[in-house]
Image (tube, rainbow, N blue to C red):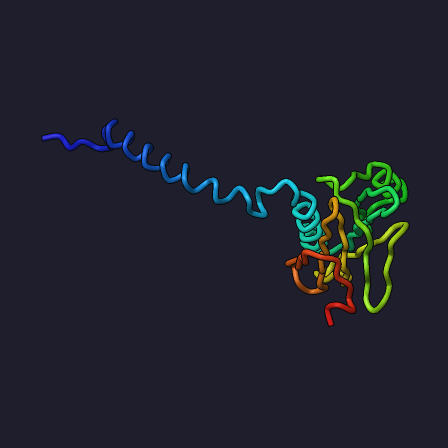
Length: 167
Protein backbone atom coordinates (compact mmCIF):
# COMPACT_ATOMS: atom_id res chain seq x y z
CA UNK A 1 0.00 0.00 0.00
CA UNK A 2 1.35 3.41 -1.02
CA UNK A 3 0.76 6.60 1.02
CA UNK A 4 -0.11 9.71 -0.90
CA UNK A 5 1.69 12.87 0.11
CA UNK A 6 0.44 16.37 -0.61
CA UNK A 7 -2.90 17.98 -1.27
CA UNK A 8 -5.43 17.40 -4.01
CA UNK A 9 -6.18 20.07 -6.56
CA UNK A 10 -9.65 20.52 -5.12
CA UNK A 11 -8.25 21.19 -1.62
CA UNK A 12 -5.84 23.81 -2.99
CA UNK A 13 -8.62 25.56 -4.92
CA UNK A 14 -10.85 25.71 -1.83
CA UNK A 15 -8.04 27.18 0.31
CA UNK A 16 -7.17 29.77 -2.36
CA UNK A 17 -10.83 30.77 -2.68
CA UNK A 18 -11.12 31.22 1.09
CA UNK A 19 -7.96 33.32 1.18
CA UNK A 20 -9.31 35.47 -1.64
CA UNK A 21 -12.55 36.10 0.24
CA UNK A 22 -10.65 37.07 3.41
CA UNK A 23 -8.41 39.50 1.49
CA UNK A 24 -11.41 40.94 -0.36
CA UNK A 25 -12.89 42.08 2.95
CA UNK A 26 -9.65 42.88 4.81
CA UNK A 27 -7.69 45.05 2.31
CA UNK A 28 -10.16 47.98 2.14
CA UNK A 29 -9.80 48.45 5.89
CA UNK A 30 -6.08 49.21 5.50
CA UNK A 31 -6.41 51.78 2.70
CA UNK A 32 -6.97 54.73 5.05
CA UNK A 33 -4.12 53.86 7.39
CA UNK A 34 -0.85 55.70 7.84
CA UNK A 35 1.06 53.10 5.79
CA UNK A 36 -1.03 53.49 2.62
CA UNK A 37 -1.99 57.17 2.74
CA UNK A 38 -0.12 59.16 0.05
CA UNK A 39 -0.56 62.39 2.00
CA UNK A 40 1.61 60.79 4.70
CA UNK A 41 4.48 60.02 2.33
CA UNK A 42 6.58 62.93 3.59
CA UNK A 43 5.98 61.98 7.22
CA UNK A 44 6.95 58.36 6.61
CA UNK A 45 10.07 59.44 4.73
CA UNK A 46 11.19 61.86 7.46
CA UNK A 47 10.61 59.37 10.28
CA UNK A 48 12.51 56.70 8.36
CA UNK A 49 15.37 59.09 7.59
CA UNK A 50 15.74 60.21 11.22
CA UNK A 51 15.68 56.65 12.54
CA UNK A 52 18.09 55.32 9.91
CA UNK A 53 20.62 58.12 10.50
CA UNK A 54 20.55 57.49 14.24
CA UNK A 55 21.10 53.76 13.68
CA UNK A 56 23.80 54.35 11.06
CA UNK A 57 25.70 56.72 13.37
CA UNK A 58 25.64 54.11 16.13
CA UNK A 59 26.64 51.29 13.78
CA UNK A 60 29.58 53.16 12.24
CA UNK A 61 30.49 55.03 15.45
CA UNK A 62 30.71 58.22 13.41
CA UNK A 63 28.82 61.47 13.53
CA UNK A 64 26.17 61.95 10.85
CA UNK A 65 24.47 65.27 10.08
CA UNK A 66 21.07 65.75 8.46
CA UNK A 67 20.95 69.13 6.73
CA UNK A 68 17.55 70.69 6.02
CA UNK A 69 17.69 73.72 3.73
CA UNK A 70 14.50 75.60 4.57
CA UNK A 71 14.91 78.09 1.73
CA UNK A 72 15.18 75.55 -1.10
CA UNK A 73 13.26 72.74 0.70
CA UNK A 74 16.04 70.26 -0.03
CA UNK A 75 17.82 67.85 2.28
CA UNK A 76 21.02 65.82 2.41
CA UNK A 77 23.24 64.21 4.99
CA UNK A 78 26.95 64.12 5.65
CA UNK A 79 29.33 62.20 7.87
CA UNK A 80 32.46 63.23 9.71
CA UNK A 81 34.44 60.85 7.49
CA UNK A 82 33.63 62.86 4.34
CA UNK A 83 36.17 65.14 2.77
CA UNK A 84 35.31 68.74 1.93
CA UNK A 85 34.77 67.75 -1.70
CA UNK A 86 32.45 64.89 -0.74
CA UNK A 87 30.46 67.19 1.55
CA UNK A 88 30.12 69.73 -1.26
CA UNK A 89 29.02 66.99 -3.65
CA UNK A 90 26.39 65.79 -1.14
CA UNK A 91 24.96 69.32 -0.88
CA UNK A 92 24.81 69.62 -4.68
CA UNK A 93 22.96 66.29 -4.85
CA UNK A 94 20.39 67.44 -2.28
CA UNK A 95 16.91 66.05 -2.79
CA UNK A 96 13.48 67.55 -2.06
CA UNK A 97 11.40 65.85 0.59
CA UNK A 98 9.19 63.24 -1.10
CA UNK A 99 5.46 63.89 -1.04
CA UNK A 100 5.63 67.64 -1.60
CA UNK A 101 5.81 68.70 2.05
CA UNK A 102 7.70 71.77 3.22
CA UNK A 103 9.74 72.03 6.39
CA UNK A 104 8.51 75.23 8.04
CA UNK A 105 10.90 75.33 10.99
CA UNK A 106 13.30 73.32 13.12
CA UNK A 107 13.48 73.97 16.86
CA UNK A 108 16.22 73.08 19.30
CA UNK A 109 15.83 73.54 23.05
CA UNK A 110 15.63 75.81 24.91
CA UNK A 111 14.58 78.48 22.41
CA UNK A 112 16.54 78.13 19.19
CA UNK A 113 14.08 78.21 16.27
CA UNK A 114 15.34 78.12 12.68
CA UNK A 115 12.75 79.19 10.08
CA UNK A 116 15.11 80.17 7.24
CA UNK A 117 18.48 79.02 6.00
CA UNK A 118 19.95 75.67 6.96
CA UNK A 119 19.21 73.58 10.00
CA UNK A 120 21.57 70.77 10.98
CA UNK A 121 20.54 67.85 13.16
CA UNK A 122 23.51 65.89 14.47
CA UNK A 123 23.50 62.15 15.16
CA UNK A 124 26.45 61.12 17.32
CA UNK A 125 28.43 57.88 17.15
CA UNK A 126 27.48 56.85 20.68
CA UNK A 127 23.82 56.53 19.68
CA UNK A 128 22.31 59.84 20.71
CA UNK A 129 21.25 62.84 18.67
CA UNK A 130 20.27 66.45 19.03
CA UNK A 131 16.87 67.02 20.53
CA UNK A 132 14.81 68.69 17.83
CA UNK A 133 11.29 69.51 16.71
CA UNK A 134 10.74 69.51 12.94
CA UNK A 135 7.61 71.31 11.79
CA UNK A 136 6.34 70.23 8.38
CA UNK A 137 3.47 71.56 6.26
CA UNK A 138 1.56 69.70 3.54
CA UNK A 139 -1.16 71.91 2.07
CA UNK A 140 -3.02 73.35 5.06
CA UNK A 141 -2.05 70.52 7.40
CA UNK A 142 0.86 70.68 9.82
CA UNK A 143 2.81 67.90 11.45
CA UNK A 144 5.55 68.16 14.05
CA UNK A 145 8.18 65.50 14.68
CA UNK A 146 9.95 65.23 18.01
CA UNK A 147 13.41 63.69 17.88
CA UNK A 148 14.52 62.67 21.36
CA UNK A 149 18.27 62.30 22.01
CA UNK A 150 18.26 58.75 23.38
CA UNK A 151 15.14 57.24 21.79
CA UNK A 152 15.07 55.64 18.34
CA UNK A 153 11.35 56.24 17.87
CA UNK A 154 10.25 59.61 16.48
CA UNK A 155 7.10 61.09 18.01
CA UNK A 156 4.66 62.70 15.56
CA UNK A 157 2.07 65.37 16.40
CA UNK A 158 -0.77 66.31 14.03
CA UNK A 159 -0.31 70.05 14.54
CA UNK A 160 2.36 72.71 14.96
CA UNK A 161 4.04 72.10 18.30
CA UNK A 162 6.88 73.96 19.97
CA UNK A 163 8.97 73.10 23.02
CA UNK A 164 6.89 75.54 25.08
CA UNK A 165 3.79 73.51 24.17
CA UNK A 166 5.39 70.27 25.39
CA UNK A 167 5.86 71.52 28.96
